[in-house]
Length: 634
Image 1: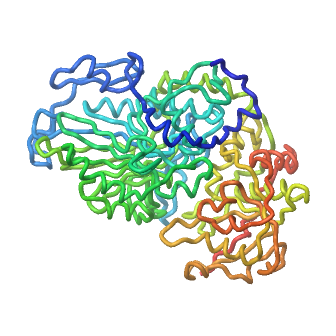
Image 2: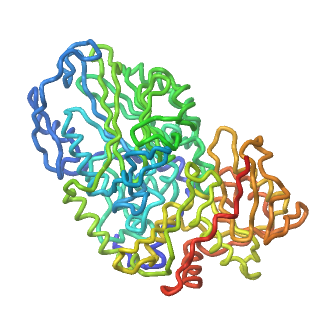
Image 3: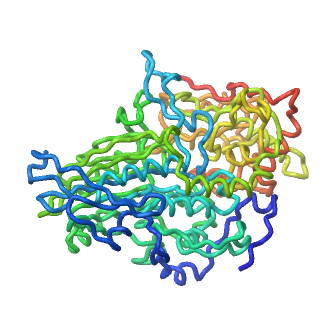
């Protein structure tokens, strides 16, 4: 297929493709079949070609097999089953190298989103001086290679959201650059996450199997061979007893079988655009795994690792390798999973933790490649069971030597995106931040407010919707918009690439009519039983208060809901703008689906760009809005 011409406006916005009727039945049989060439992607390739003698092994560095000599095993192991060697004694050592929520962050993220805090202040807050810059594919690859070289038995796994919600460098090419990077890094297994479905199930199958994009072709001028790693989707059903990808993968290490079960969160269908997951059913995580345990045991598997794109949130004073005050769905999942499961590698919440919950090791490695989790398992060679599991979250610092292969890959795509990405669209007077409930329990966000204001501005004219209020979902604000006084391109300049990274989904705006009573119910839906609180970000002029201690369903005081200083009338009608994720009731905001007289609008990124152009100049940059739209009461 000839590569299509890269069109700045069209190519900047990856499309969402509907699942065709044949998708459920016709594409299920297409699975990844291997590397397709002779270069090594991991140590297993090297071992297959040249079995190593005892005491030695292989590692794959820059896609070249290199021999390594392993130190003698320590004696007197905790397992009490003999020497902890690579499989010749009573136990087998296995290293799992894990990460999650990479989101195509091939280049280092900026601001606090590209840092890890290592210490706290006496009052429990984060010590700013302890923050270390972390992440970037060229450094991430080096850390993975170094960890892999430490063990003859190793495997690299991802707990979802490898792609989707990605910066322009990856998204412009429908995330092919990220898949290619992970092929180079040597990723073995990847559980699907909700953002894997951003462009629909058919596009996700293309990510696995390869081939040029059906509309845009292969925009970088080369072909796309697909993922050499294997996607897992145990709880993504396409029919009775059928799943989108394999439910699990069984690997043998030193004669011991280990099963890796991959899943996304059950609620995936509620937090992605519905057309992208038509024909798919997302099943309960615990029920899915527990039903597989007898099947796995019948195959002689007694060591089970769950890789799940669902997670939890630690207490604000919990550092990156700790487990203080963890709450959220992963706690219940760990408690209810079959005891045969020894390790849970989690994600979705972008948090970092290293825990033991209900007798299981539970980990998460923050997001965008800032951390990698180094997991060491000791397997009993006779029973095949996990007798010891320990982990450490390792900071991916930017002080190591960059991986040359990844450096070339990033540079190649950077050259293709630079003209579009570097275009200045506006100016800010200070850093605009996304919401963070741990730091600000009101859920307010200066950047979220700016986006809501932009969406209101884009739909306020009568011919464009006649909007009076706009609501932005917090999950759609992907990163801070950083003001850098040292930026040689101009302090406070906002580029198209930066704006795209903030809003990468290409959602369209939808304006509808809601009554005042429906708006009150909508605000109550921000607070959920057994779910994370999600505070919507309102446009300027809309204010309300909620009580933190009030019961769910009665947290918002109706008298506090005001529009331009006037109390909202429950019986009156108001024109409300949101995006096409929330409009059909997504993210469990079902009140939006009750809206009437709906009208489609602009793409969210276009609205933001127009707002910056209209409201800011280099001489008069856009100020941060005041955080006075939401009030939290006791």
